[in-house]
Amino acid sequence: MKFFALRRLRAILALTAVTVACSGAPAAEKVLLDTDMVEAFDDGIAMLMLARAPQVELLGVTTVVGNTWVEEGTAYALRQLEAVKLEWKVPVAMGFAEATRRGRAEGLGEERRLFGEGHDDWMGAYSHSRPESWQAAYTAMYGVKPKCAPVKEHAVDFMINCVKRNPGEVTIVEIGTCGNLAAAVRRAPEIVPLIKRVIYMGGAVFQEGNVTPAAEFNWWFDPEAARSCLRTPFKEQIIVPLDTCEKIRFDGPRLLDVMGHVKNEMIAPMLQRKYDLFFADNPDYVIYVWDVIAAAIFVDPSLIAEEVSYPVDVDDQFGLSYGKVYAFKGKAPAGARSARIILTVDEGRLWEMIYKLCDEL
Image (cartoon, rainbow, N blue to C red; front, side, top):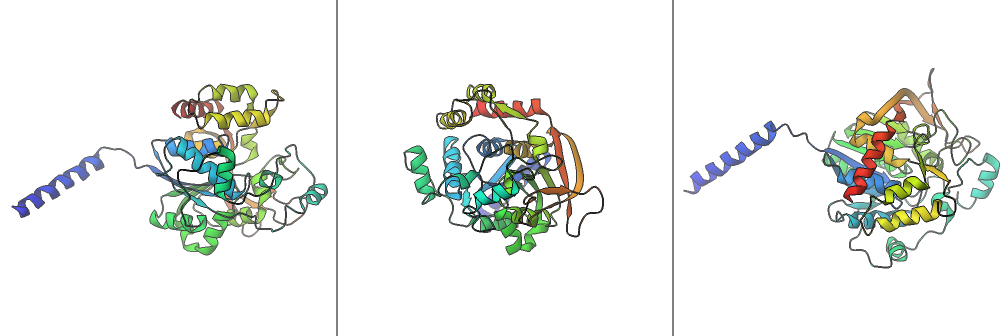
């Protein structure tokens, strides 16, 4: 009897497998988000977009210094995942707490005097003291203890293991500084051909920078890591530069409109803090949409309206062009690799995606 029962069970499982295979349902696209996390706009919304998209499997979030100290970014990531009840489903791993070039914070005033300032005075983590721990950052911001914690693995090891468990399937959406990814491919070069693609938010290709006349913030913060990544022979590299982002204006009335769509009691205060920081005293002030674009084109590549492909490289020499990205229309220097450079996305459909996400939070 056990023999026949076992045969019947195997037949049922085989039939189920055939039914699933013939259903035509596409497999979820796997993604790993590497981020210098902030609350809500911009990194937080990018993370939630990836976490909530039905055709996407967000394998994890790795945090790195940049917009925030890694302890802050980790706390913000955990809080926002808690807000949508995904804290046990999406692991968070802490990564590098410093840029490749040590001591920049101490010499930043002189650096900016010598190399110039852009139209954006954002200094990210360098604008305030580093917290004692991610727990301290969490409690200071939210006044309660966290419900969960980051995994014990360092972000670099988490990234390596994630790719090895899913060879050829993982896209890395790189919306922070590039220290974690650069270290991962240096430590385990065998993962390079196993990564499906890398999508960066970084650089200013055919226009001026934002934090300096030459450079965009992410790649200015750690040019050495950005250059290392862009010179790695990934199967595909896609760059969302300022050329794209500064076409998507984000002002006070727009943020108030977005806030009207959010009912989540943990996310709503984050948006209010964003409004108070940028727009409360100056409702005509304008920022832009940055990291959300990188997440959105992963979820829906048809958003891309205009792009070009050129070999690219980042200047990591400490000088006027520190952090500048170059695209070479002619003969490129040895080591530069081709990347798809996104120039325009469908703004209307991008905002539709954002509003739909906010309605569901």
